Length: 171
Image 1 (cartoon, rainbow, N blue to C red):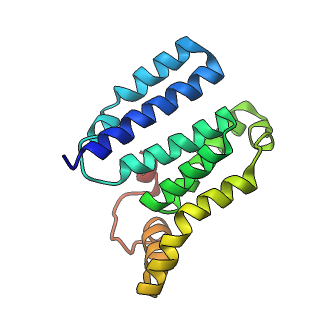
Image 2: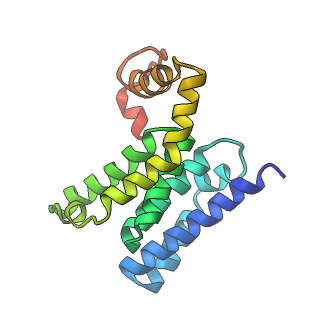
């Protein structure tokens, strides 16, 4: 079925949540984190609907798990996959998560302790950049549309005729 890859992304995301939570907080926390994540309605729906949000979620989960498990290849591959699925938001979300951890922990330790930034960046670019280059060659206006229109103008202007406040993007 066409939904099998989406179900697999959900299962892989659950596994990554379990591994990361187990390493940080122990076996019991790993179990409960996975149970909480796997029982979310949003996660369940994205394992059944043909949209790329499940791939974005897998990419972000892989990025966080790779950071927690100190597996440079995993967080680089997660960011690359996430960027392919949804664009720059795949980089923004982990950065926001790290920022919140620094803010609530009142320490820059989570960011300063990151190892392997350059190799992970190279892996992420190696996965995502070839597609963007090929797409730009085929359609020269693509990057302007995809990056500027779909990502920056969507949130910073009224180009999409949204009537709600900026807070709606946080929900």
